[in-house]
Length: 130
Image 1 (cartoon, rainbow, N blue to C red):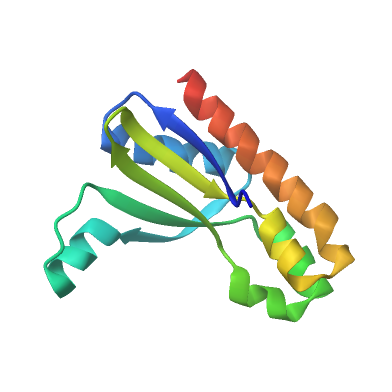
Image 2 (cartoon, rainbow, N blue to C red; image 1 turned 120 degrees about the vertical axis):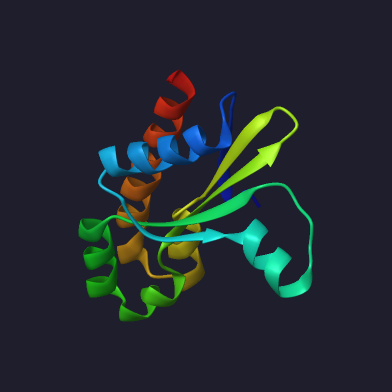
């Protein structure tokens, strides 16, 4: 089962993180959370790892429609996008919103998830063109 779409960016980590937030914003997604997992795991359990940030993104229009269809969908929000260092550069992994719809079995969520998938995919493709 594929649950994400990924791209590898050949740029500085901080530049890639800003690109992710900028391109998501251009697609109507705001950044609700930004978790520096590298720093958190280092501070809490002494783990050493490459840079790894989780961006919690939300498109208010789509989130509102999804919650109206099924109020329990909130436990699966926001859409997470991971920005992490890899040997080839910076990898960006975005969760497939279709996964949320398929987990609920509620057909009303499918078109909302499809629109979210298209918007996120477009943002990832624009990142590759930078």
